[in-house]
Picture 1 (cartoon, rainbow, N blue to C red):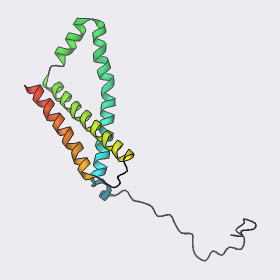
Picture 2: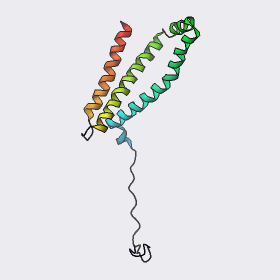
Picture 3: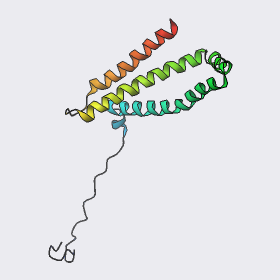
Picture 4: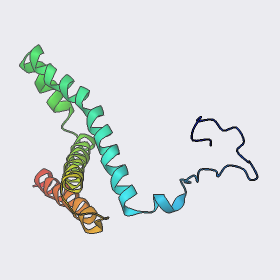
Amino acid sequence: MNVATGSRAGVRRDRPAASVPTRRNDYRARSHPAWWAFLMHRLSGVALAAFLPLHFWALGQALHGEAGLDGFLRFADRPLFKFGEWILVVLLAVHLTGGLRLLVIEFRPWSGLRKNWIAAVAGAGLAAGLAFALALVG
């Protein structure tokens, strides 16, 4: 490049311009614990967001009177709903602890992957799920 004029006139092109290396999204990235932590955090957030309209609808049944809410609560007192509640608590615990993990990664001076934090998130979600399951059974 001619520095004085800023033009490319007279620049030799003996070899092609270097291509930008591309990254492939292959199976190795998807087997990494951080990718699974990302996926669980994202899916749990989407599932919790999908649950909110149902929750607001159920709360809205109270506006129709006591009979409307009691009818819904009787309908929801089934094993499938109890299982759904358990899944919801596990998703909430995983999303909460995963978000805390991300906050620590963003705002603390440490760097690098912390696989033990990913394991702690999974353990906290499992512990919350087991505690809730014991409360449902007992």
